[in-house]
Length: 541
Picture 1 (cartoon, one colour):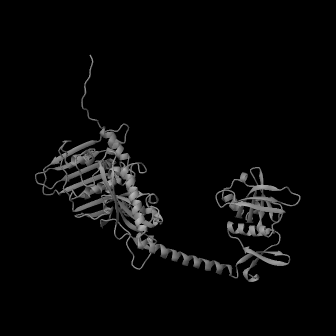
Picture 2 (cartoon, rainbow, N blue to C red):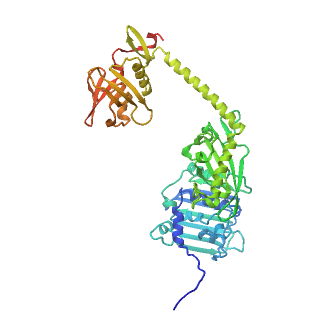
Picture 3 (cartoon, rainbow, N blue to C red):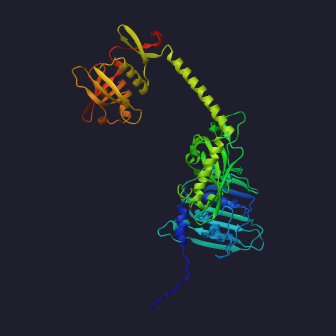
């Protein structure tokens, strides 16, 4: 029998595999904390107090407690009309699924990061006398979901009538987070909160809750807001953006939808990094992307700063806000998906961010800084020059001299580095004072590899060696330390042979370095014929 029919179907989601993928897609173990903070501080929750506690639980080790006094959660069990608790424990109940959601809600994935634990307990009540108190216990979610294939954890939902001892809000216990293997110290967790969560909010919002952080016995009330660089009265070394720089552009997506891409640049830079605790090791330098006020992650500053702003990343602390990028983030909100691709929103964001930095670089404050820094650099260089001059005239400063036709000729200070060794050698070469019948330096490079290509002849009875590779060193042992390939070296010239026992001595200034079946000539400038070392007070300059 022939069959020809059409019907509507719905794609199926294997929830367990999806849960596992969410857990494994994080870029930082504390991304779970970021999502928990967003849940508690969301305007829709209406909390006036939230607390974050991290401690070592006797049975499970590293654990967390998140607590708020907000609207609490209800449970319906209806996927079409989910309550807040349904959304919390389910997958993809979010605005992107067309179900509405909290201000910072995204794909309904954040709370699933909490499943990376040995046990999870959620207790919640709306505070309304007619509503029930709910308690959800999830047993062994980490072990179950990370197994192959993933297994379903045991969920137990308890509900009861409220009593006078109950308090409005939600409490979430995360026992043995991430296997319980790592306990964060107070400053480590606090630093993460300010750089990656709503605690470090980059924009002004009303009705924010009081926040308490407790790690073991240490606790602190945290002031919400990003830790911006601030102006330092009387100092030119710190430059900040006093009025945020805003750029916007309307673009049309591939679907034909018009989107307004607006970016706002805030922050500044400083030479006094210690004043603000800036350090690459603390991940608080450079440029951070903020969406709806949350500073999610660092962007590569040099890719976004335009062509006019020229400061080192580790001196900077900038925020670039762009809410239009929210749907362009990857799953764990740790980067922009297809950051260097052709997406019109992402491309507009990159272009507008560069324009913001260009405007900042054209500001009076920035140009004044550049001028004052140049002045400081010149003063510093002048001071360094005076120090060099003073050192050269010190009575104990030694100089290399050579007796030539009865006259003592001053050539150079005694070398203390390779560049001095080269300078001295070339002076000897130019005055034809080398102990060779012929020597012509043809090329020199300060890049990786052999220093000089030259043509030389030892004496009148020797063959001429053309276009040979010669390595210069301050002391011979540096040749070994620098890892040069003996097979690429025809000669070694140094100021001093500091390890003569490793060489075969041929004459006062000539040695051979025997290695890997090769015999490489080594010349010590210090011992060249006629060379003398004199103190400053013994010479006439």
